[in-house]
Length: 413
Image (cartoon, rainbow, N blue to C red):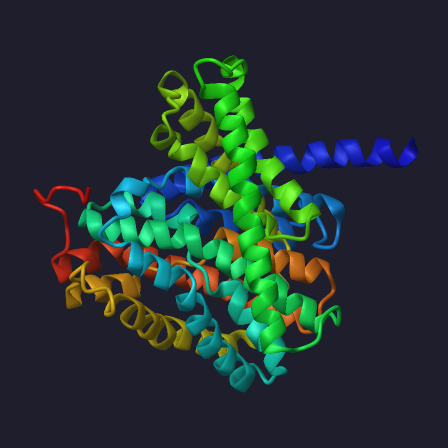
């Protein structure tokens, strides 16, 4: 009872402090027209290591719960916002960027991290897999500020949603190796990757389809009044069931969101609840971004940041200016149907902010006590800060210079 009496007020204090500071920093972000996650990170550093108002160690159950729940809800919403009918002309590029593209990025960045940071290759690859995916929670707000060609916008947003799941699966596969629960074997790793991803896809599809019918079907939809609640259950339930079966919970929740957002394809209509679902999902996503990034900022180890700053910055430069261009051109050029121009591919090279899922994965690695976690967390934090500050803030300018602003172009159908 005494322990519970301490945990409850502590949790309420953390939530209150995070939400208040998050609202204030969010307003500042709106004024400067920058992604709010930048200011969430900065306010976290202020209330954490500077003012010592917030102290939630990364290895506590509260921190792990926030990271997993936040990543789950954000991934679900990323899948929910994708419209399958708009991807017909670019699906090959999206698939290539989201699966082999993540592996290409992770390999190049992993080799650079091993060289510049001086850490063992497996841990360098673990770091690279954490930061290899792009961030829908950052990209979508950026694209609300600048109108670009629909084909490019849909491709980048879809990639950012799909590759989060791939990056998560790759991260947990490498975690199993470095923690000694699995041996290093390319064949076994491929089999485990396929098992985790396919199992996650099947689980997410099953859970979401069942709930979609229970809320939207004309005859069996007896939960229609609870559509929004059922949506949250689909997100959390997909992760829980897949994780219990040792599949990818993140892949499951993303696919669940994809099914939920495209229920009309299956003849299920939830139009009367669409505005309510959008409102709830948007607010939940903002709250989770606040919690994840403010906590991440509050846990920054300045000593480790300074220790790995220059070497970490070199890794990020390789990440941004070598790995990303190679990945984009290798994955976009084979897609003849999409007819990508050089300017469009260069824009995709520039727009690849690191954000929520890498932050969550980095926090999990630190919480698990993985060797070299200080280097992994420091470089992940730098990657988030540099890519968001440098790339997200210059996206409108780059779009204008490359001439891909949307003027009167019809969206891809």
